[in-house]
Length: 103
Image 1: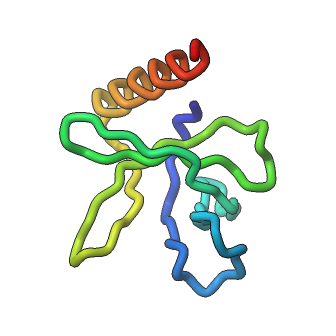
Image 2: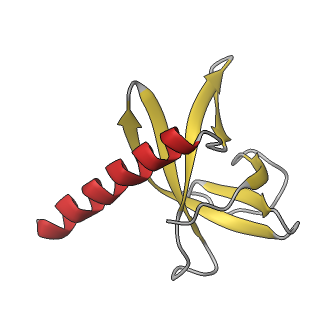
């Protein structure tokens, strides 16, 4: 998983073109480059939801994990800034991937 930090995220209701049926988000990296990201997985840890996004145009690139926060009945993707939280969710996600690979 990549530990890149991102400046902002637009939700699926933003004014960019998107294919319907996919949860597509525009993520701007630290260099100001926009990436179309597709939400491929969600999971819970300590009563907090997290989402895994992959670059829609570079499926071989590492995924990125965001914390999902809700406000006024809308969900937002938020950077994980805390190092301990980041390590915990990456460990959990890697365990999930390993379990699914065993099935």
